[in-house]
Image (cartoon, rainbow, N blue to C red; front, side, top):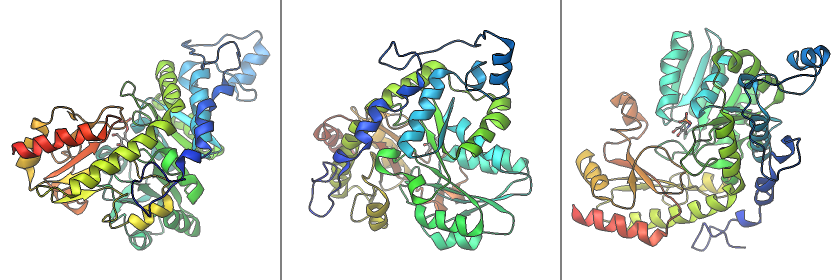
Length: 405
Ligand code: PLP
């Protein structure tokens, strides 16, 4: 079957037939032990009562399953954790109040003072400021590499390297990391590997199947999918995620609110359907942008002009809803977003509505200019999260705004 994400010849994919379409509908629903409702239960309780001292101590000691206090988990949170684990193919999941709570809790659990991290320079800005700020203060050293070159990861590894970090496709440049190559390297060197799968989603890419140890998500984005929730998640080995829960989440308290967990669970039910449409719309918009004389460059893994298109075809089932494109510098880029009407000028992504933002002055303004340049974030770069509107309407909006300049 031709994948609807691809409108031309050799790019056939088969997401429509993938098992994730069925899994997403029920993922996590077993966690609601009370079978009275068909939608997951929303448990807002801050504490849970017990019938006996024996049962209370068994749950507190982790000897029996159950919940005792909302910071350590709730049935709704558990349902989300099981859903994320199932979709990513992980042994376990762990949910948080934001993507950054997930990332920081994981890194603070696995990294000790004196440890070294290798990460790509094209990276979500707050992940890199976490590495350069809080973690550096904590005694962690970071080397940024060109994430598109697996050899650069290999060359940067030292005796004290404790973690290889990947984000693919990267925010905002849509550069890819060869996840299998990084996973192999980590395994060969005995170094933990982590991949941020926010842009791709488990519909388009499953890093754990490539051999990566832990996946991180901003569930605020495609998993939630409707721009109405902030949440985060991890998927990976049960023992490691247990350590993150009991050593770090417990102390830093970055727990997901039950209402937020419920909204993400509801979003997950339609994730594969939404992502298919995001994929298709983004490819259509990217191909149109490539034809426009005002556009200097378009970045989208589904374009044959993307330098890593072959890798995208190997490790992604679909190419995602994110497109980046460049105009001739800061001023034309800022004028364009001012002139758009349908596409909303806003950060965040993965929403049903199309959002566009100017990376150098918005999401990545805090990244030092030199590192922005090294990561390919030029002043004219715009990042677009292509929504579920009719692609022709989005193209008409872009066409009018480009023509206004
Ligand atoms: N990872 C990526 C790739 C992101 O784009 C973001 C946010 O934009 C995050 C992590 C952080 O997620 P949150 O904003 O939910 O904390």
